[in-house]
Image (cartoon, rainbow, N blue to C red; front, side, top):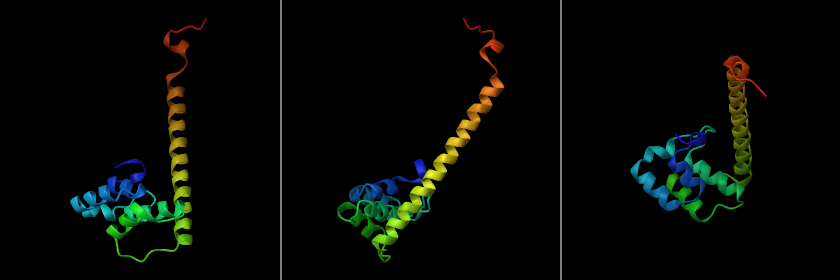
Amino acid sequence: DMAGGRNALHLAAENGNSEAAEVLYQACPQLAELEDLDGARPRDVALREGARAATISGGRKAVVDLLGAEPMPSQEELRAQAQADVAKRRKRLDLAEAAQKAKLAEEKASNGTPADHGYQSR
């Protein structure tokens, strides 16, 4: 499991690497159905990244064609979904950051000050 819950096929799709996507898909077709933490399958990732780039062409188009015969959403729909994904990702990262800060504060509070451990400041 990679960052954001994406697998190797998600990453190949995101980057428009159709050769890697084909190898991964042939080796493990189930990867195409796995969703990342934003609920996107690899085909969705290729489409949304293409929408961000204002065009779905080249490698991303090949990945989309490889991974499914579903109708292609409009550019507006793809852009809206890409923006929603960014908002979800930002919220997830903000929550993770807040949890990490709380954990560090708790550890600091439980460890006391350096003087409590025999250290003295000069």
